[in-house]
Structures are given as C-alpha cells and as structure tokens.
Image (cartoon, rainbow, N blue to C red; front, side, top):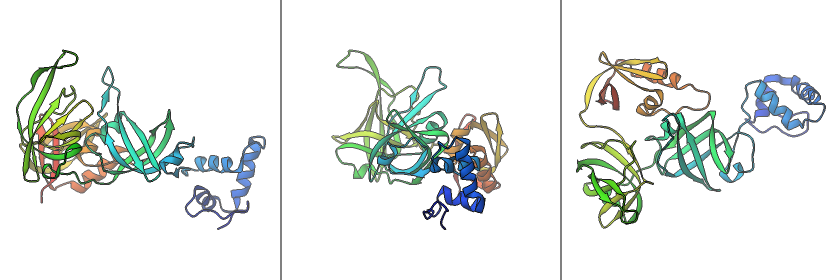
Length: 332
C-alpha cells in the first residue's frame, strides 16, 4: 500500500492502520490537521495526532541505545541483569524498584513505581526476558507510564546450590532451617546490627546462608519455604546477602487444598474465595499470586476475572498466612 505523499507505508505501522481506518480521507485529514496548526505542523506530527485521536498507538519498538534519543513513548524487549531491593518511602504509600537491563545494543536502568514495583517484586528475576510498553526516558533512566505495562516474556533458569561457583550469584532453593536473628557489631561503625543465618537446599545439596542486616520489609523466612536469592555472594561454601541483595519468597509450608470459587473486588482489594473461605489481598499481590502481568490498556481486574473464570470449580493447593494466601497452585 502506498500513501499519496509518495512513500510506501510500513506494514503494521501506525500510519498504515490509520490509512485502513480512514481510507481515501486520510490525506485530506492530514491537510486539515496541518492547516489547523497554521501550516507549521510536519506531516509526521499530523499523522501522530490523528492516530492518537483515533485510538491508534504511535509507539515504536526500540533498542535501548535508540531510546535515549526519543521524546515519545516507546516499547522494548530486554534481559534483566539485576533486580535491586525495593525502596520504601516514609509514610508507606510510595515504593520503587530499579532493574538493570540490557539488549544487544547496550544497557540501561529501568525504574518501576508503586503498583508496577509490586508486580516486579517476586515475579521478575535476573535472567528473565521482559516486554515493556508505554516507556519513556527521564533523567537518563527508563520509566513505564501509567498506561504502560511490563510482562515477563521468558523465564530464567535459576541455578541450584550444587552448581554454584565462587562470586556473585542468583540461586533458588528450599529453606531447611532458620537459626533465628542474632546481634553483631559492625567493625567499621561500631553499630549494633542484626544477622539472620539459615540453611538453603537445592540440587541435592545444602549450604549455610547469612543475611546481614535484613531490611524491615524482608519476607519472614520459614522452614519449607521456597525462596529466590538475587545478588548473593557465594564464598567458602556459604551464601552471604547484604543490603543490595534481594530475597523473594515463592511459597510457604503447611499447604491446604480446596475448590476455587472465584474473585471479587472491594475497593483496591481482591477477595479470593476457596471452599467457602475468603482471603483478602491487594490487587497487585493477587496478580503475583496468579502470575499475571498486565499489558498496556488492560485493567488488572479484567485479567483476574478472566483467570478466576478459568479456575472456577477446580481444586487448588494453597498456603495461607492468616486471611491472606501466600502461595497457590493447581493440583495435578
């Protein structure tokens, strides 16, 4: 298909979609849009405005090296190299997490805020491939706009303890034993701090792990819990975690089974019903529980409702902590 301006339209481009929508009226609409700006609007800008008015996305998929030079929203694919710890701001209403990402063209820092940060926490790990939309560059870092989205496109394989080598690593395993928090004195500052020793097992091997100064919002480790450790250091047969490490709980012991009934919504909360018992969680936590990652323009409640309809009447295995579900799986 060719446009009247002279060049062939790129297959699947926003202008081609606009041409399919407006047909022969496209060029007249472009002329009128340029005229409404006193003739000072470039044709490309006029097409973009018409696309936006007609609900057609003008986002372009870019490499990370190209994204630095654009002022328009864009989409991209990248590999997650590292997930930094969640930062909680005073008052508890604001939180953010930074991801170090890369593609074949270079690397960048991706910043996620609030609900997006909750989706990433425990759901995206180093080594994963991600797809993002509605992205923009601000102060040298990439952020995702309110109507944008982040999705896990490819799952990484976490190494087990038996395959670890000396140095910085990510590892997945089962907590076999938690020794309990202990106090120690920081050699440099003389300050009293806490350390949490525990034993982690995977790949037919166990090792001692020490979490130095775990943050206040750290998950409560329990025996039998599946966890992922990111940014740990393996040395002399032990795993060591510091303030730059990230720990995600993947489940909890004490599993139960029941019939999945459905999900309802009350304000910002999702209410999950299993065998007549109701469990409440934030919508962001519910998305993580069901491994759902909203794309741009899709409401989280819509995704959860579709998932609930698919699971209705099926038997699920789950673990709970009070009135909140900590893990959920379909029973085979």
